[in-house]
Image (cartoon, rainbow, N blue to C red; front, side, top):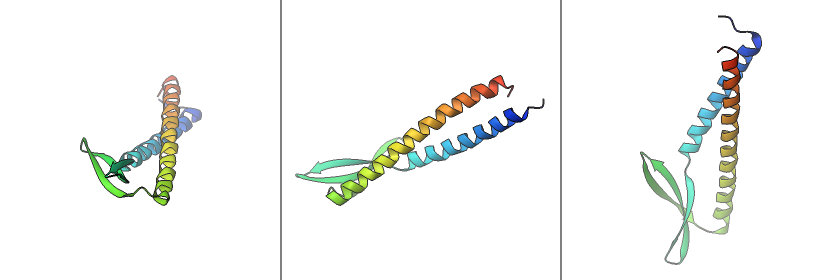
Length: 104
């Protein structure tokens, strides 16, 4: 079966979105989230990750202003990446439906 140019182009865009989503998904899973803990009246930051189904925490540093500002920037970037991930998944779903209608 021969597909028309529009369907082939859509399939190419679909593949590109899939590759981007997978890379972003791996990046999001590889980076941990920051958790603040209070120990003996002092606050500290830890990086929390899921490794082989278990939660692990690694010390990051004390909760001073500079480090906290850095972590807030990192959190904002992670939220931006998560929003992009959701947007890409929605685009993929729409493109997959169009491809099915196009005979793929």
